[in-house]
Length: 80
Image 1 (cartoon, one colour):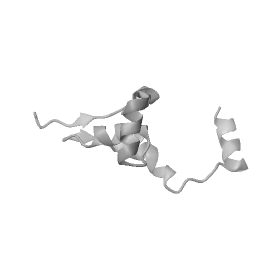
Image 2: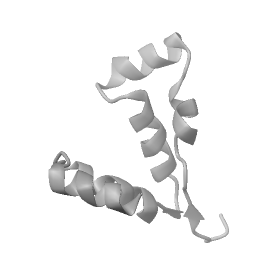
Image 3: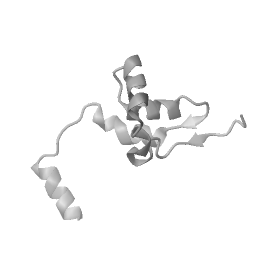
Image 4: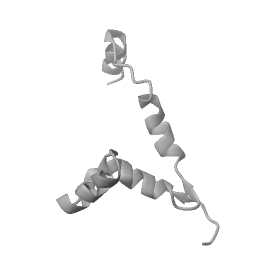
């Protein structure tokens, strides 16, 4: 409306928005196999001027997810 970017920080509010009544979840499931959280994220991202770079950065590594190995666990332990 005002041509300003909207930053979306927590599109599912820590999971709160993914907890919907059973009837709502059934409605979503009737239309696709996507999870309720994915509906929330897609809803937020579908509005004009939404800037979701942080979300993209926080999830892009999951496409080719690789489990931590012993070396990485050791690095995190050292950082702690």
